[in-house]
Amino acid sequence: IEEVRAAVDARDLAEVARLGHRFKSAAAMIGALTVRDHALALEQLGKAGDASAWPEVTDRFATMEALVATLCEQLAARREERSAATTD
Image (cartoon, rainbow, N blue to C red; front, side):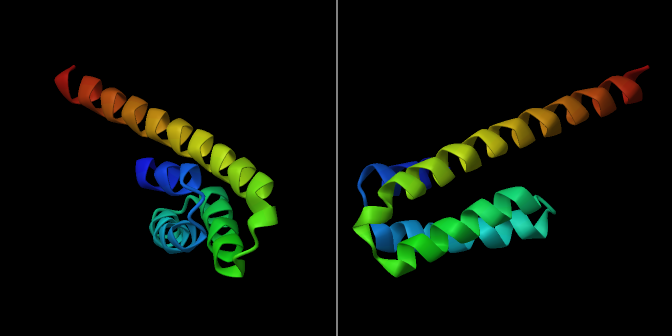
């Protein structure tokens, strides 16, 4: 997510497209379909190369970043629950 943030901050549409594609694939592999959808949108916006789309790029990225943070928190909580269950 840090790489995507750097590309968005640099306003690098080609890099946003490349990283959006990578994120889309990774999200799909783990079933994070909403994240996948936002990553797909970033990929498409980046490929379109339209600088006037930056508000949508930044909005999509902000939403994707929040979704990824929530997903990470949920995974950490599950890991802790499993760890506690195996020590009981």
